Image 1 (cartoon, rainbow, N blue to C red):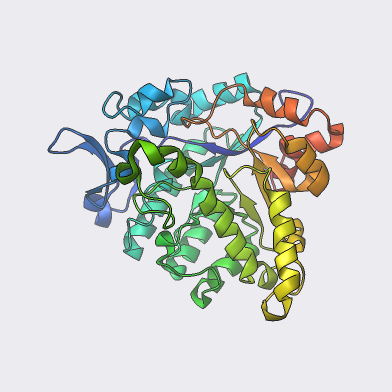
Image 2: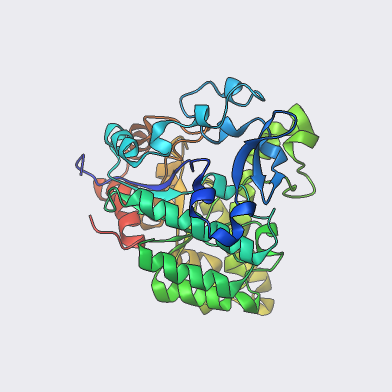
Amino acid sequence: MHNEMLTVDADGHILEPRNTWLDYITPTYRERAIRIARDERGDEVLLIDGRPLEMLRNRLASLGGIDMDPVAVITPGRFSYEEGCPPGGYDPAARLRVMDAERIDIALLYPTIGICWEGHVQDPALAHAYTEAYNRWLVDFCSHDPRRLVPIAHINLLDSTLAVREMRRAHAAGCRGIYLSPDLFARGHKRFNDPSLDVVWACAQELELPVAFHVVVRDQPTTSYIDSYQAGGRAFGLLNFAFLAIDVMAGFTELLSCGVLERYPRLRVAILEAGANWISAWLDRLDHKYEVIRAVTCLSVPPSEYFRRQCVVSADPDESLTAAVVAHVGAEYFVWASDYPHIDASMGVVSTIRRHLAVLPLADQARVLGGNALRFYGLSQ
């Protein structure tokens, strides 16, 4: 431990080397593996089952880009994917050096390219092959120091049987949680209370693997108000970027409101990269609407009680009201995240989050900085 309070980054990211899927995918699907290539126009593209993700055409450097000029990084064609990747994104020894400099003791690690392909793949067997390959690579990455580098398995919900198979395999390999896309496209438009998904929630509960929702990147519009960056252009870039958080908020709300947390009371859920300062107002709103229509819901208690029983939410370091929200809702429901090494992240975030929490009692600061993540994921100090 580098300081008087254990510090756990609840949502750090890796940057998958371009050959990750080529090297780790089962041979049957190697020809359809995710890869980075130059197309016939000379553009650098992310190929998903042979098709480019247009959102990131000539902008793959923006998947990393921390400590770079964001204007330059998002300029099409100016930087390659690797030029946007700091060593801490793909080299575990370099990542530990970054963590030491940032005073981070433990990092829970999530994908980057992995948040881009779901929804563009509707073949369940291929999606399973993609997640298995990534999870195997991530476990190898974290094996450099499994006490400090914690792998979070990527699970796809197109086929529940395959999802459960990979959950069990990844858990046995050392993964301590599950990343699920909140996107309807990623699960074939199945709702979270679809009976076919019951085995997934039951398995996560049995294995004590917390489920986390995280923002995603895609070409499909989020809602009728949002179009892709290419279609919306400069006028809608900020709207698109900001609205990434809506997916996470919606996924959490759907899971809660459709009764999954009611039926699986030991299932744990983390809400990531949507900020945390909204959670108090949103729980108040859910509780109010529940009282109005409680006779026609499948919930037996107000929504905020499920949140307090089973959930945590991740605060962004630069949120200005975190301390007040933590004090109002309760310190045991909050974690924090660096989002390293993405373009909208920054260095020095531990100092920033500590400054924003400084008005809280020391015990509450310690919970948010690391104690809650330690408890929620069953990690040893």
